[in-house]
Each structure stands twice: as structure tokens, then as C-alpha cells.
Image (cartoon, rainbow, N blue to C red; front, side, top):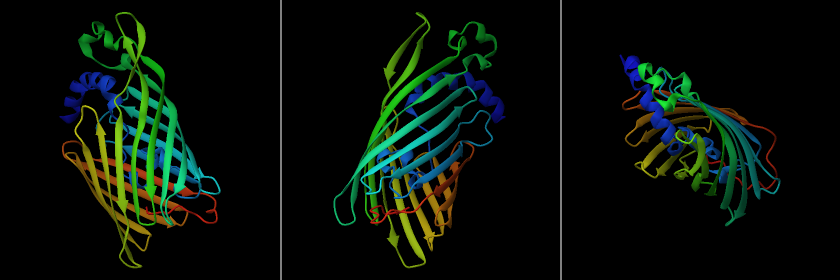
Length: 307
């Protein structure tokens, strides 16, 4: 029943996506373990070269549901004053909208106290915006609806910025990862291309690590998301770490879902994570996370690995 209903609404969903996708960035449930995705000032935070992989299946089982895959490399220079990184990602929606992109990250870090560091970062990149509109099955309206007459395939440049503070127990960040995004809008009447600046997404993050004893640490965090034309969305998270080896987490995303996650620090250089989202009105979502730290930390490391 749900599948048939979804097929009925598919053309409407795609039209809304074409107009409104620029108001929606990929969603990550385990953001606290790889915040380069939402804040360019985070790159190099861990103090060692790091590879992070994310594979997210949104609304599993629903035909054409969104999927996101990304791989991120970030590191810092020897004196920890510069962080940098690169990311490749692929987003797909309803098997029609595909976006494959590259992001570059660069930031400067400034010690502000014995343990506190402020980082200010920039992001630049682009993505290939592909919309296979001619593959949409719209039935009898297909021959009359010009919106499905041609495919769209454009390169879209983008940029972003962020600021991040951390010490050995607390972190806080504010970012706008897509400050400038020019998306192509096809003008069917004149058959020409126009460019428009998209709505800006704002992210605020904060977290704290309570060291209870040698066996247990409690690490709450929040993520506040804001964009023009949409209500504020808040993720409230709590992670319990046992001997800094196994992490068990629970999250609530306002008006959207409950989330559960588990993290395993397999070795000092290897971490595996899994999150299970339980939306109120849609099928569940799955997210896999893998981080590999390569090389060794430089002497006098000023990065504090809260998460």
C-alpha cells in the first residue's frame, strides 16, 4: 500500500525537490564523530591524519529513498596551527536526483588558554547536479509537462565557513557550510539558464565530557539546525562510553525521530559506529560510520579528542 502511494506522489515529490533541495543538506546522525561534514573549522581537530567513511540509507525499504555516501580525509600541520581536509560524496534521491561532489577544507587554529583552542575555517567545492527527469514515470501527463522534457546536468560551485572551540572537556561550534551556493534553474520559456543564491543553513553544536570514573564517561551534545522557511530542528544526544571502548548513545530529533547508536573503538586507530533512526512517520534509517587514524600524533598535541 505504501509503495503504491509513494509512486502516486513521486512526480510531486520530484518537483518539490528540484525547487527545495537547496534548502536541504545531507543528514548525519553521528555528526559528533565527524563534524567536518557540517563545520570546516573542525578539520584537523583530532591531531592525526584521519579517514572517515559514512554510508547512510534514509527510510530503508522505501523505493527511491535517499542515500548518502562520503569519504573524508583531514589532518593538521606539525605545529597544529593549520587544519585541512578533502571530502568526496554522493547523494541520491528517488533514483532521479544525483549529486556527486568534492569539498576542500582549510582552517587556522589559535590557542586561547592552556587547553582551549579556537579554529576558524573555510570550505570550497562543487558538485555535479544531475536530474534524470526524462526517466520519471508520470503517465499520461508526460507529453504535456515540460518540467520532465529534458534532463538537467550542471556543475554547481559552493563555499562555506565556520568557527569551532574546544578544550579537554567542552566544544562549541557555529557554521554555515554552504554560504554561497549557485544552483542552476532551467527557464523552459527561454530555454536558458539562470543562477540563484540558495538559502543558507546554519548549524550550532556543543558538547561536554563528564568523566565519572575510569570505567564510565558521559558525553551529551546538541546540534541546532536553522534554515529560512523551515522550523528550527534540534538534535539532543547522550553517549555513554565504557572504558573509552564501547559507546552507547540515544538521541531525540525534534518533531522527527528517535535515534540509537553504538560505537566501538576497535583499536586506538580504528572506530566503527552504527546509528538507527526511528522516524515518527516514515520507515527507519541506517547509518554506518568508520574512522581510521593513520600515522602518529605530533609532539605537543593541542587537540583534545572529546568524541
